[in-house]
Image 1 (cartoon, helix red, strand yellow):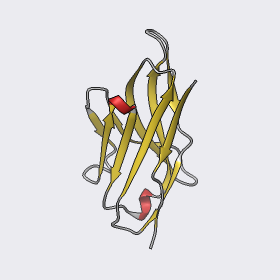
Image 2 (cartoon, rainbow, N blue to C red):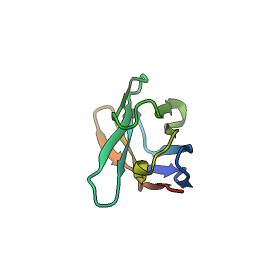
Image 3 (cartoon, helix red, strand yellow):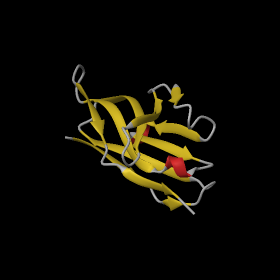
Image 4 (cartoon, helix red, strand yellow):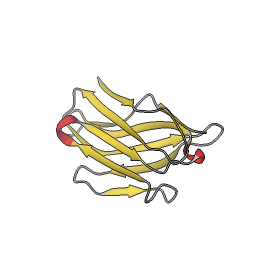
Length: 120
């Protein structure tokens, strides 16, 4: 069994900051790419940012320069530092990871989501 557990979502004013965390646990052999997605009410889930095991990153244009993704491989944890938050960043944020439970066995896992609300 593998679990991803997110934390850090909250209500914040425009221009504020939040830091999301996502920790993987269970029968983990190794973790490849990790990332964050978000889904606003009435919209499709969209990519926010990804990071490879070696630290290469990718960002959606809408968050470039404001969000920073990082990971701690020793803790099987990925983070999303969100600065200069805007009301349009309001969404449920989901963690995703490609996790190997054996040398050749892997799956794409999702967390349960954490709500981020940006409002005055």
